[in-house]
Amino acid sequence: MNEAAGVRVPLVFRAEELRAPAELTRIQTIALVAGAIGIAASFAGAFLDRTQFFRSYLVAFLFWTGITLGSFAIAMLHHLTGGAWGIVTRRVLEAAARTLPLIAVAFLPILVGLPHLYLWARPEAVAGDPLLEHKAPYLNPAAFATRAAGYFLVLGAIAFLLDRWSREQDRTGAPELRRRMRLLAGPGLALYGLATTFMGIDWLMSLDPHWFSSIYGIYMMGGQGLAALAFLILVARYLAGRPPLSLVIRARHFGDYGNLMLAFVMLWAYFSVSQLIIIWSGNLPEEIPWYLVRLRGEWGKVGLGLVLLHFALPFAFLLSRTVKTTSRVLAGVALLVLAMRWLDLYWQAAPVFHPDRIFLHWLDLATLLAIGGPWVAFFARELGRRPLLPLNDPALAEAMAHE
Image 1 (tube, helix red, strand yellow):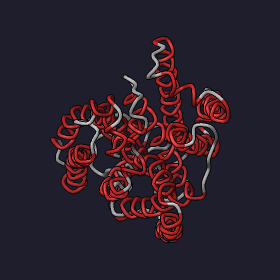
Image 2 (spheres, one colour):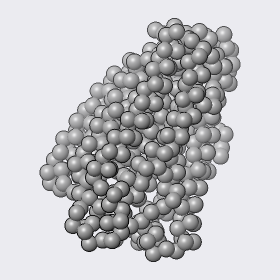
Image 3 (tube, one colour):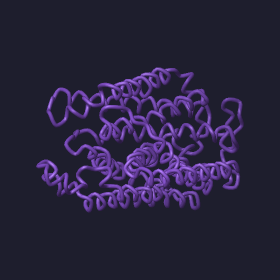
Image 4 (cartoon, helix red, strand yellow):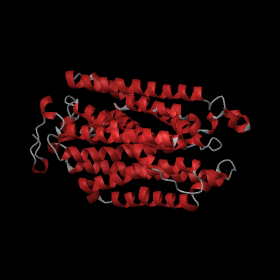
């Protein structure tokens, strides 16, 4: 028994004692209703303004993909490094990673809308542009779809194996399974980095095919990790207030999550500033216009908002140990960061289509619900299908005594 913080916590649980809260069923229902409303509104919007639908849908897709892939990457990072911080919320990360098939299905509308989104997908635009003609062997619909299939297949295979071994560890407790997961997590993280780099190039950077950045993939990875950590904190806050994890998740765990989020906030800011400095100091005519649009006029105000609300304010809050160990306050910071993740993606994508002004459309919210509703319902279902703790993980006792 662990009596840290005056709470007696059993070091051995039975699987039936670790079922997810029954309220998850209600969350699934609410998410499905919200998703149905979003899907219906998105269908209506697609008929009214097909081009705007695809533009809004792309940003929503990238937002939810970031949480999925970021959770997958953090789960692999924990397998590789260990630590009490990841054991008590490993099931949350695994459940989020298991939404990858849903993300793959959600990608299909983007294939349909390629000519509405990407200049290189319009033959008449490519024919009159020497740079697009040069890039055509890479930037063409068939290659784009083939690469996307490769990303999902490779990452899906790694996620499947890690999840299968985690489930088997619950059942058998075989000690070699932990070593297997660690051995796969290293190459898995490398492949994740490679796939995410090309995803960023294909799905977001190529919206402006005349622009390029040598560190755009790292910038994408930093954003995905930050989005996943913010989501993890919100779910951990929810679970910590309800049995059985109310007996397990302590203030120290939230302190660890806050430290990790502080690290990722600084990483995201470092990558962002590094990209700006590299491009600005190079002063190349094919690179500078991307920033000129986003740092002037109305878009410049959005950029300033990102500096203040995506970096400065979360950074200032997360320096405080009290904030990091107070789950309610930390959840508020996480919610702000998650909202800023959407705004950052919007700030990168929307100026391609509306360089002179901010253009918010009701389809931005509708598509966010259309993908997010089913995603949250799928996540909640997956979270409820397993015990909330990895029962036979050797580090479980240490994680529960982490106070």
